[in-house]
Image (cartoon, rainbow, N blue to C red; front, side):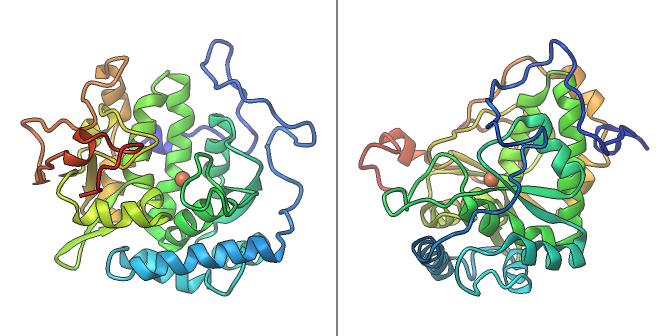
Amino acid sequence: MTNDFTSEFDFSALPVVPEGTFAAPLKRPVHLGEDWLEPKQREYDSGDDAIWDALFARQMEILPGRACSAFLAGLEALDLGRGGVPEFATLSEELNRLTGWSVVPVPMLIPDHVFFWHLANRRFPAGNFIRTKETFDYIQEPDVFHDVFGHVPLLTDPTFADYMQAYGRAGWKAMQRNRLKALGALYWYTVEFGLIREAGGLRICGAGILSGPREAVFSLEAQSPNRLMLSVDRAMRTDYVIDDLQPTYFVIESFEDLYRQTVERDFNEIYNTLPPGFTYANAAVIDTDHVLHRGTQEYHLRGGRGSDAPPV
Ligand SMILES: [Fe+2]
């Protein structure tokens, strides 16, 4: 079956964005080509390596027993705790041996179609900088710690690795149909902020949760957020928060199930019925939801980030 995730479009060359397609106005640094790839990874100094090590140690205090087993196995397989910011060349060699993926350095957030093109070719674009002591707890732009520690371990899982490639292909199609916001919500609620059923409970699989200490605890243990089983149609219609803890998390049954719900689905049908904006507020619970936990939303009701609200 051919659908948005398995389209026959040839991704060997960078797709040309048709006239009239919405694209974020990002200014490409002059030393980069159209692929937006840095010619080589930045050389990190000992201060940068110390920041990586401190971030790594902090997460490892929290993640065992909370992160999904595929993530923890990936961390180990790639030896991401060997000390200092990982070298992409070594990392890519190992990852390529496992699932055919590589990690490539980019200066900042890159245009959507370029990002999708890299994913479609099993290349994961990762930030070419690391946060500083001043921004240790929170940065808005994804740095090398978020990108490599958060995203790369799961690329060692064969099913998840295929999902990410398929997402790149689907992204390009969504962009042409002006459905990027909806497909972006799916990425947000699975790749960045997903939970997964495992070992009789819930574990974390989203990179946005895995790369920070607060949300790793909040997403699983707090009473505030909703935890709902993933429905692709529902998640694609749901707004989300970009600079605070999430009011709602979606839970996948397994990576195989995520693959089935997306790659084996006809997105034409979804796109034809999608309204132009989001239908559901980020804290909403609706009749058709399979609710695992109905959140109190206390954290957000008390003001969320910027207030002294405890993440309960
Ligand atoms: Fe990310």
